[in-house]
Image 1 (cartoon, helix red, strand yellow):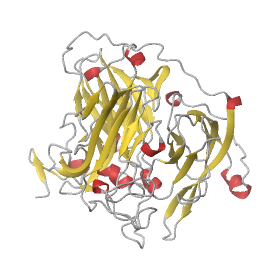
Image 2: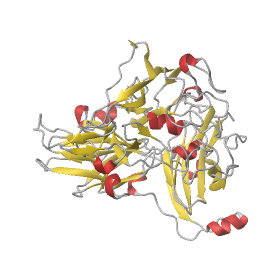
Image 3: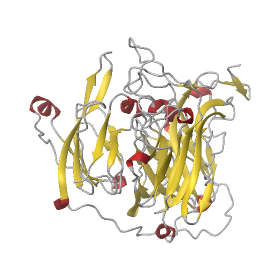
Image 4: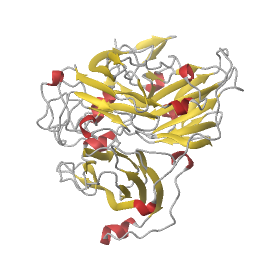
Length: 517
């Protein structure tokens, strides 16, 4: 039976207008416990990737997903700063994918259908534990990609406290594996942050936002081909936008809260969709961190944009909202996609709220411009492949072209992204946390003629919500977006790419090799 009823009305999972909202309570991903724990050794975890059934909505049948330990989202990994852990990521998935594989993409032609590798997004980690796209492996490690080096990854967590996340990163099928459910939170804590009296414990809640579409029987839907279709089938699509919003694995959920302050760790884990978050009652909130950790001081906001892969921690004060119900909206879209979730301030205050929104969060610094050892100009451009499909490229090169970005260990570099395409791209650089310097408009036609950057306006300072440490940045069309970063602690093979996963899988990804001087 493909249709399901509530109060005499048919619910069709493929038609979002028939799906009742705010039926399911928001679930909180459980925190993973180590398999082995010893004072003198790194905590050891084992995490298996499994096919499982997941209930996206109370009125849906169970849906096939792929999850870390069989759950979606995966379990949350919590560590302390400088606490080294080891993780054995194990592929126990079926041999065949349940989503359409495009064999024309790089890394997909002669590779197994189901291959996985895990990237902790935002981590400063040795290259052999970074989740390189070609370090994939199949069930029981029986087949391995060209850069596979070890079964057990090590994370030293030698970085600021931050909201990171882990997700699949296998070459050519990242978009499918993440969409299937392979994503989870990785949280780094710091004793100094604990002293700030920020909301914690059950008042510190991660929110993973994704868009999904479903078939009438409740199965996940992902398009098999472009519209109109191209000659090869299945084919990657230029972008994917679902027609429902899923938060922590539930469609349009609600959360009951107490009249007090809460911390929410926001993550846009969508393939393509960007969101601008705002409450329907225009209630303000306080941003306290970006991708890479705390800001120097809180920023009061009424709206917050989030590109794919971006994170932001915010504090919402519900103290004076007792009895009220309101909705977190996405102002980028209309209709169903304009709704994220509902908040109900209807729980009694269980204990006195001693949490705080401090005026000062942490010391902050950037890099001395005089210490910069290399400036790089890197284009984002559009092309077509041999099937006449649109293909986005970084610096006019494909994934398999020789590596051109070879920063020296501990060097400071400025990268200037020159966006020649008519839409924005969230660019992610592995290994580092960087600072956005500015964005500046330029004449695209002139640049395409002779390669000269003729600026057409003044540089724009970073927006208030993006002045902290970042690992993913929105590169707007017709602008030069400049970032500054240090390649520290590790040498070896890394990558940078667009985090629109359909673009990443279709060659909008390039290697980085960090070298010794």
